[in-house]
Image 1 (cartoon, rainbow, N blue to C red):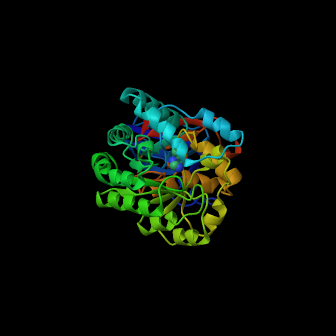
Image 2: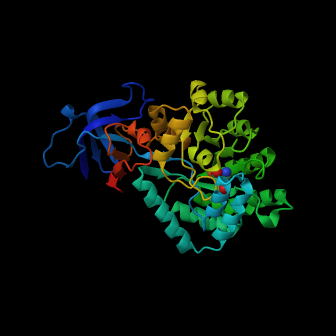
Image 3: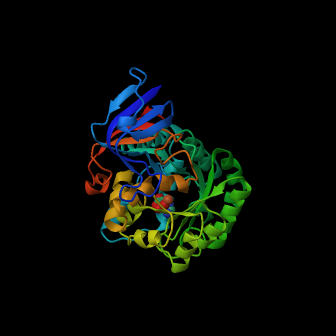
Length: 390
Ligand code: NIG
Ligand code: FE
């Protein structure tokens, strides 16, 4: 199957950081063959083969790569609307809220969790996301964590084992005993279904030493590390993660100068999660300072029932531009190529020959409208692997 998308007013390839005309082709066309991009260039040079492909006329609208949402927790039961309501009335976010979602998740059937998960995937496709990473972490016993990674693996290859999300109530008096469980039988059961190992390295969750144990055990079992750190306060977890070669440190709401220097000198991406600061009323991290220091920044939604219950990458782009000091072009790059870097993927996040045909046609003339028109459904059509999904 071949598709020619023609008359694209503005094509953001994201093959380089967009800057002025860099990474942008005006009056462009894209030829898709099966699941891959076969050709990209000016519409006047497009291959002409009448009847050789399905033609889609973009009518001067903008096309961007499918969003790569490299951080989500979308296999869970229940919600925490009451907790959000209390927070908007002045309560603070704390890691302990996770435990109430654990109870609801353990009590939900696979069919219920699957239906919910598939609903979130459809919601994400409709907003332009074509790749999503999904974490376990609301089971916290061997049986339920295994259910969660298996369910996640039904819908994405980017599955993360997060048994070390928080210490469950039954281990409250023995957190190190829980780390033994996570690094032993739980890891053994979940690793065959996961690509990544993650840990919530934070006050109220796991110490830097416990986090290191979790990551090292995962690495020894063939998983690649990524880490939640610096969400509620500064922590040595950021540099520990870099030292262990983490693909990404996520949150980074609180970073020291030494953290920023270490990130800039490393291959570790910093994944910012604007939905979290929005929904917890925490201060926004200064993405401008990070980018100027040479840190590679990604943007993700962190969809979860506690700290960020949005699945909208356009929303996160808009907040990153409005409140974190990113330009619209930087935010788009971070939500596409940046997310791909955070997942160490070289087949997604950019529009170029050989890449997967993951594409978003916007109902707008330019990618700038993603942040200029916040909250407006600008996603008109979405292809994943060359197939329309929304
Ligand atoms: O990334 N920080 C840890 N995990 C999630 C929140 C989970 C929850 O509150 O349920 C996050 O923000
Ligand atoms: Fe998270």
